[in-house]
Amino acid sequence: MTGADFILGILAVATLALIAVVVRRPEAAATVGGRIAAFAALFALPGLVLLGGTVRHYEQAKTTTFCLSCHLMEPWRQSLRIDDPRFLPAAHYQNRRVPVDRACYTCHTNYTMFGGVDDKLRGVRHVWHAVWGTASDPVRLYEPFENGACLACHQGSRSYEEHAAHARFLADLRDGTRSCVMCHNLAHETAQLDRYPLLDPGRLP
Image (cartoon, rainbow, N blue to C red; front, top):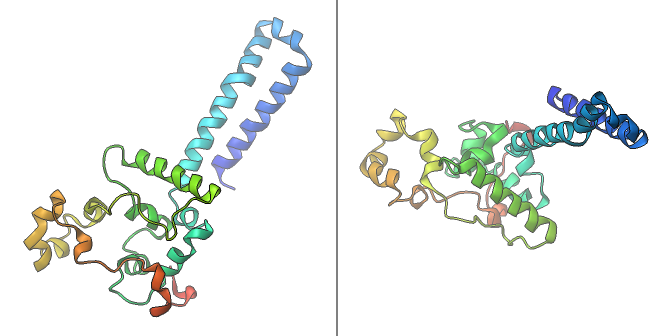
């Protein structure tokens, strides 16, 4: 349990205790102190708990563990074990080119002004489809993969920008007229995992 979880727990207990007092002794609300306690119990403290829980979940939803916790995502978990450097997700994950605790979020975030909000809304859609059994099989992206996810890390890197192929098409890659996945087209390949060697789980980050 983190410190934030502990504080949220204390706030929740305090909220329930105050609500119990207000319900059992409504006459206490006749005094100024009672009104303050009633306001705190019914509005202020629940609002703080809701806000804190939302922030806590927002951060938790960025983790690789959260993304891969759904059974539908098991093939994607396995794909991170592909023992072949041509496969971008596996190579990035195994070599820590992305933060391993936020690997999914790092590559599948829309790096626009409100990209984080858009990602969370898409995440709610994922949960909705998973709960109601309407998820696509296999799971597909809602939108084509955007270069911005790659350029957020690689743009400005000397080894990236001086690479012959990248230097030739850098302007096209930046404005999106050419897609990174046109060349780097080996991604998760979840439908064909049995065809590729998989790294022992004990050797993963």
